[in-house]
Image (spheres, rainbow, N blue to C red):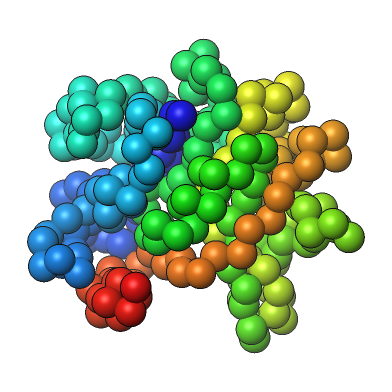
Length: 234
């Protein structure tokens, strides 16, 4: 199985840190006391049958390439460049020629746990990870159909519900669908395109047990304690 890591963004809300390296390479002290990057933490949690990594790079692409090289933890590594920041669906479209079968997609700057990664990988169809939110939140509110599958994703401010945690299992049929424009047509959204696919191919919704979205400097400062709390508890 291939894992696609979207790591092309500039991480402007984490400056000045991201003046020196791309956001996915921001480092923290993990539960084992070792300094490692955000994306490295996730890659170490991948099951063994994920045997190839494909990074979509853009901003400071050479830093990512130099960090991971052609092989990382026994997995081959490939790179695809997104020259313009045209969104997650556009980033994924660039990988299409390399896709062999069902694949995993993760963000390079979010943190996941092994339980959730295993759940997504072990689902043999299309799946999306979500997080149950109580109270107000801003983002993609995932709507389920009567069978618990993906029905819609509504962007905006919401009062409770499921937020998209941006971890996906996707089959190659995804590439049959036109990319859905978002942000007044300036970008193309992967989850919105997945919604279109869900009308023909069910997309299972899997609830996350732990997910940490890294958006700013305060988040990165909180990472060590949050990771230790989660992983010391198992």
